[in-house]
Image (tube, one colour):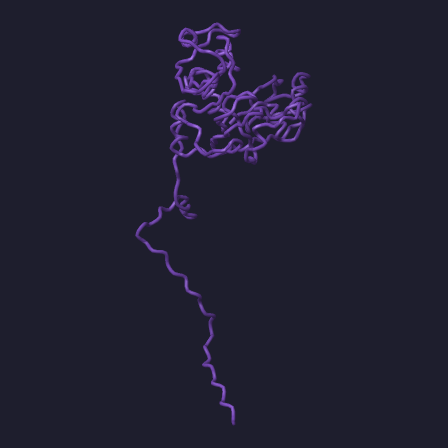
Length: 294
């Protein structure tokens, strides 16, 4: 396993990442006798020196791959630190020892709904890459009149500031009065893309909810601000979509002698545990109390 030199030295407590970057730029660090460059990967076998003194290296142990579904509420942001001190999605997530949650894409502060988070940077990057072609489905409530020509235009493509964008499908989901619901699907995650496409037609998005990512649907009953673990079947299906190996489910306790997991015997009844009597113990018959004299 290799990691960037500034990350490894910071993990070992030699300084902050910025300090290490400064040392590298000043030419004070060497790796295997050669002057280090910024971002160079190092392994446990490499010899790293600072001003001629060998440094101890430390690599983080890889966390088991996990994925959770988070129901993001309106008002939370997807960054870890906010200068304005607004609430972030990470405030409600379970703490990880020796690692951190990585969000698969982002939802803006006024958008709610399904957000995937994982412990694997590789999985997150593959899911977010445009080549994955994973569908994102949104429930959109728009304010304003929408006609067929507008829907056709958004299906065929609209030129936005950062290039042409289009919905793969638009489905009428009903509504009354000035507000109307639609379900839209697209296969990329550009910044505010859904809102900008509707706004290009002169209508306003009054509510936006992501309800599906690939085959994963926002669970009914999952309250805003809460999360749930992705089940093993869905996790392996997600891994297969980006050509990553599936995770085998292990059952039973591990045998300390062989290192293998013992399979439970279905027809074997648990043995009843009887309280053992201490050695040398002999029960003494209770003596009957003599009858009282009248």
